[in-house]
Image (tube, rainbow, N blue to C red):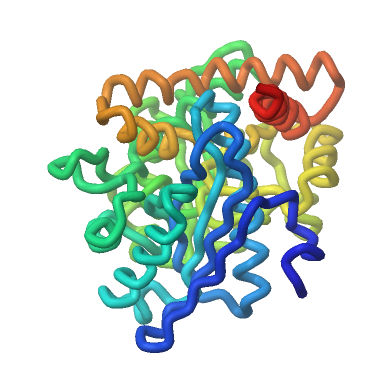
Length: 350
C-alpha cells in the first residue's frame, strides 16, 4: 500500500522512511501539519507485524498530535515517529544514534520525545547527535519523564467528565477501570487513590498489575475482561483502537476517559455509537495532552508550575467541548475536531 492512497493519509506534509543496514534501524517519521509550528511528538518503538501496520500507526498518531497541540493552544504542529522492533530486545545505543541523525537531518521540522517503548535514557542518547529532543533530564535543561503530567491531565479530565455527567467532580466511591499499568496509568492511579476511588486494573504484563494492586489497593482482571467490568469510568491507558465493533457492545461504563492515543477504531462511527448509547467520551488527544504540554514548556525554559497550571486547563477545555457537542448535537470527538481545525485554519490564513 502506498503512502498517498493509504486510508490514514490525511494531507500529511511529509513521511520519512529511515533505514540503516549496519544497525538494522527501520523507522518512520511522519509530519502531519506545521502551520502552528514545528511538529512535536514522541518516538514509539514497537514490534509491528508489518511495515503497513507501522505506517498506519504513525499516520494516525501524527495527525492526533496536530489536533492535540491545537486544542491545547500550543504553537506546535503534529508529528510522530515509530521504530520497528521489540524495545526489550532490539534496542541498541548505535541504533538510537543513527535514528537521532535522521531527526537532525529534518532540520527542526520534527522534534521528538518519549513514547511507548522509549525512555528518558534513550532520549539522552539521541540528544548527543541532535538538538531536536524534548523530555530530557532536568539537569540538562529538560523536564524529565512527561508521564506524571500526562497522568495528572487524565485525572483532571476525568473529573471534568464527572462534573458534566453528575454535577460533581468528586471521585470518592467511584469505580475506575484502568486498561494498562504503565507509566501514565501509574500516575493516574496515584491521583485516583488519593480521592478514594475504587480501581480495577489490567495489563499484558502481570508484574505491572501486581505493583498497582500493592500500591493503590487496585483489583486486577485479565486483559480481555476489562471491557466487561461494572465501573463508572473506563480509562484506556494502553494501545489504541480499543473502542471498536467487538468491544463497544460490552461496555457498562457511563464515561470513557483515558490516556491512550487513537482510542476510537473508527472516529466517526464509534464516536457516534458512544453518543447514542449515552456514554460520555473524552477525546483522547484532549485529555492526554499533559505530556505534550510538559515537554513543550522546555522550548521556553522549563517551569514545572507553569506546565502544571497549563495542564490543569484540560478541565475547562473538556467542559467547553462538551458544551459545543450538546449545542450542535454532535459527538464529543466531532466537537473537539472543530476546535482544533478552526485554530489551524485561522493560522493558515495569516
